[in-house]
Length: 334
Image (tube, rainbow, N blue to C red; front, side, top):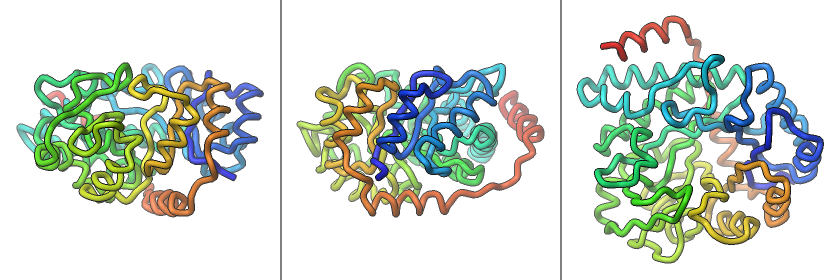
């Protein structure tokens, strides 16, 4: 029975031990990082090998390909995409041109991923860029204005869907205000519920119909002083599913991030118990993955329904890549 987790792997090909673990535990999907990506044929083989190991030809394969600081596929085999802030800056001057550039960029990324068999990209980041906040978000944000970020985030997400790749809206319900990097410590946001609802949550509400979203490892004291969103039934029920109205697949951020403390198996089970559909474990450590797998029960029917609803929204609109690159370069140059 498939378990509700996305795992990583250690290198550019599955080891016999990884293949056996995936065969026995049947994780829903795989996430790839720079360490897993050498060249196109190798990635295609890795993706195919994982899907063969779990026995599901449509098993999701994820990546973080935002552009700027966060892109796992690098030149010379793949295009270096600008950071999201670049498109937000254009949109601040000319919304139509900013949207056009963001859409072209997203379609190009989706095209590159689809060729490799990667069908889920952890974008768009619709956290707000906040003055004085930690720069872990920084130029990964589309901007400071909630309405602009909402508009641009929707354009990007819809472009990925049109290109046959599922977008993952992150980091719900908002990481932009955090004063710490959740990769290294647990951020605590003390803003009032009114402040959060007026600003941080706005882009997420606007994208509440998207198929996937990723949680923030952030404590919001206005709702739960003891637990970050990923582990908080109160935040997931009241804010993410409630106020924001998100109805899609809810994926935890990486359980290995230092914002979370405790046994990885317990963290995985706690994230599902709190209301996440899927847990995310990225580092490819076999011992840790076995511990996480042992702590999880099979995927719930409601999660399967959300997964199927998301996949049904995928399109395969044609793209003239040469023309798209030329037009994007023209906008960026201007």
